[in-house]
Image 1 (cartoon, one colour):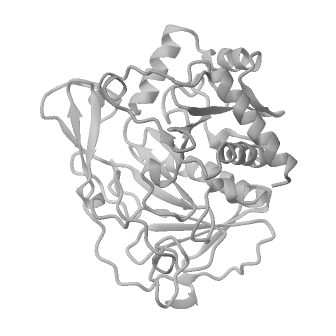
Image 2 (image 1 turned 90 degrees about the vertical axis):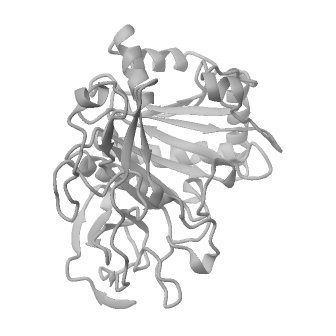
Length: 394
């Protein structure tokens, strides 16, 4: 490990006193450090002196003509690291015995995934990203149905490390660290939206082996898609069939119900009227915001502690931590900006202390859901769990 300062390191001051420091890894992938306000880290960062294999070829997308969905075939992801020990953690800072992905000690680190589902190729060459040989040719091209259609799976996948610690989750971080991650989400959303061919940006966190997590390190990911995802296409269709202010109507409807879990000046968390999962909470800004890049400093400041309260309450539902998917839905880059509102959909399959909801015949095959726990009951349980955590001073 070379401990000299990287000559290409570029520093930028962001909101809330957070410093962004950009560099590259040994194979040309982008690495960005986000330093907490008042960090104890210095300005220097180590050079990534590893000798790495060339980056894998960009995956291919195939069209499912029955549904119109594009399926990425990424064989490079088959041999990903699975639940390594702490001394082999690929997301921890590098040591002489652990040649991990991050050369230096950090507060928050974001880097391009070594085994991406999308990218590194883009529709046009940019920086170290090559131009794809068969990229999507716009949304109309992607909408066209036909047998045997393929396109290059252009885009970018990034890893967001919440902490240098080997274990934990977003909910185990401090308010200061949560605020740094939120700033990183906003900064990356703005930057990724400018890449050639990107149609949607998706920050998310998978938590727990029951969800399929392969690394226990506290981290999330950001996917940059070359298409509008099927879920968002369904959402856009619902907006077209109702009204452009559908999200505001939903928010007001939920705020007047017994399903509200937490409410602040800028954000409201609630169990939705038609919740599918045993644990499902949506968190929405109180004004229209298309994505994280459009949020104000005040909104980000309130979100950090409020989101932590929600996650810690969900963890307190049972004696052990709750597996979940924290999915931050954002408006597409080029359409629906005035109607699709940024919001979190936090879902867990945990329906009891030792029971999980599995998607079997009807739900997996036909997308026809049955919910076992009434949303009003779920909201009451989450409110009570949040109250217990706060009463205990945790």
